[in-house]
Image (cartoon, rainbow, N blue to C red; front, side, top):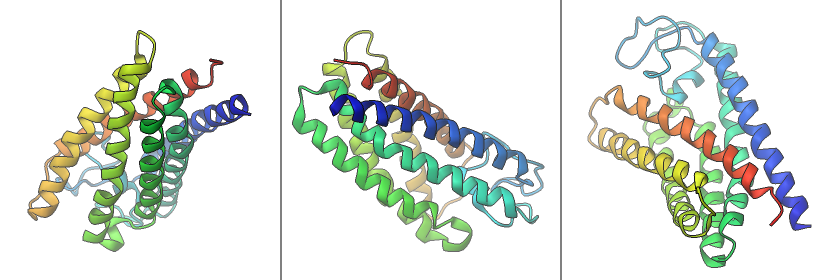
Length: 220
């Protein structure tokens, strides 16, 4: 039963990552243009656009984005849902620490539930409330990631690939979150560094999810 659950979680994670990538690439291709620092920019700027920019029904350059916005929303929803089996799978790599594993699963699922709300509350329509929900969703997610990395460093067999990728993702995500919150709370205009770090953290998260899926599905 445990082995079957592990295989199911692994397949769900990998399929979720693949579906997210396909939907997000399509949304990027359809995005008309505009960033928070250059409204005249044409097309999607990978390092300058936030993920949530793609959810806007009217892009930041003022042009309609009806199909792309729905694809972007679907992509984020798929990724968030794939995090549910991910948070179940991570503790299998350090099964000897049951207490930490339980905390990782609980905090991770709380973050998943809150992030689903974020997906359906785009900044275009919800303004500052979107930013507040991002903070509510991110804090338990970072806590879960921190506990998971600690468990992996202690319990994952060498070369500890999952621990290394997870720690890298966590470090980038924490810096990005601090910058995001400081700009939001201080009512200051952000810098392009924030969406850039967001993308770096996202790529590391996707890699972490795939590695964990492969490792956690192996017998023993």
